[in-house]
Length: 180
Image 1 (tube, rainbow, N blue to C red):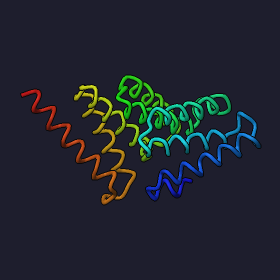
Image 2 (cartoon, helix red, strand yellow):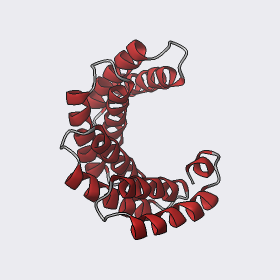
Image 3 (cartoon, helix red, strand yellow):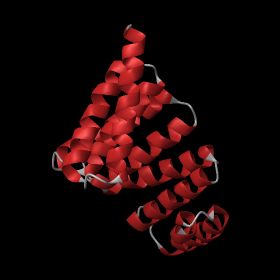
């Protein structure tokens, strides 16, 4: 299912995700981490299909399992919070997007080294969220953090470094245009 999703064939991915869930629900306990992973994969497929509401439903099912079986600062929780934030963004619910991005960042700041690319991704996500709600000052601050961590954790030619730098330049331009 994941291969089809990555290859840009979400309909085929959906078919296999649904088979996977059907099997997992029959053979695994309700609170099994593999079932949470299957729900997360299905959520990603629904998001790829543009069905954000269904994506959110399965993100939350996965999170419900993870919150019961994982320690509160487990990196998988941060990833789930990140996925839910992204889905809320697709739905235009920027307050929930902000809340879940903050939860993801809180975990990542505690468990990851200060120059980890996932930490940079959380800073990037918060920058984009603050931009969406019109707080350009916060957006610039978080994008600067993202660029700094990406530059220290990834090769200079990595696309995430270039994208973050481009986003930072755009945000700084918007901020200075608004201030002038």
